[in-house]
Image (cartoon, rainbow, N blue to C red; front, side, top):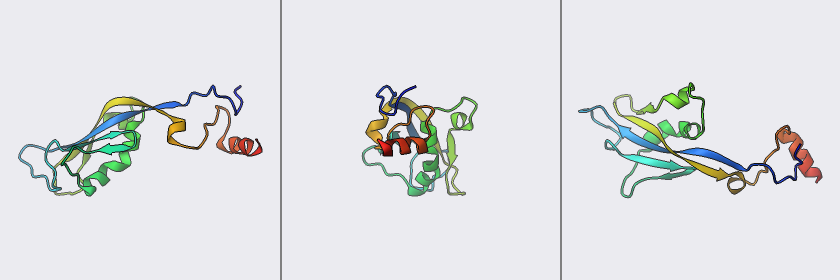
Length: 134
C-alpha cells in the first residue's frame, strides 16, 4: 500500500482534443451568423477560434455542457461515444454542431490543480484528515 507521501502515484490523465464544426443541410439558411464549416478547436481547457472567425454565444451554449464529457474516454456503447451532433438552439434553424474527437493529449494532475492526488483505497475525507495531521 502506498503512503500519502509516496511519489509513486501516476499523476497523468488524458483528454481528447475536440473540433466543433457548423454543418447544415444543403440549401438551408443558417440563422446564427455562422457559415458551413465554421469551427473551433478545444485543446484541454483552451478554446481556439481561427483568425477572423466568430462564434455565436447561443450556439456555444448548446454544446458547452457536453464538451468536458466528450473530452473523456467513454465506453463504446455510451451515447457520449456515438452521438456527435447537437441541434442549433434556434428551433427555426436546421444547422447542427458536430463534435469530433481529433487527438489525445496527456496532462499532469499537478500542473492543473493544487489539490493533491488521493491514493487508491483512500477517500477524499480520510486523505484530507491525514494531510491535516502531517
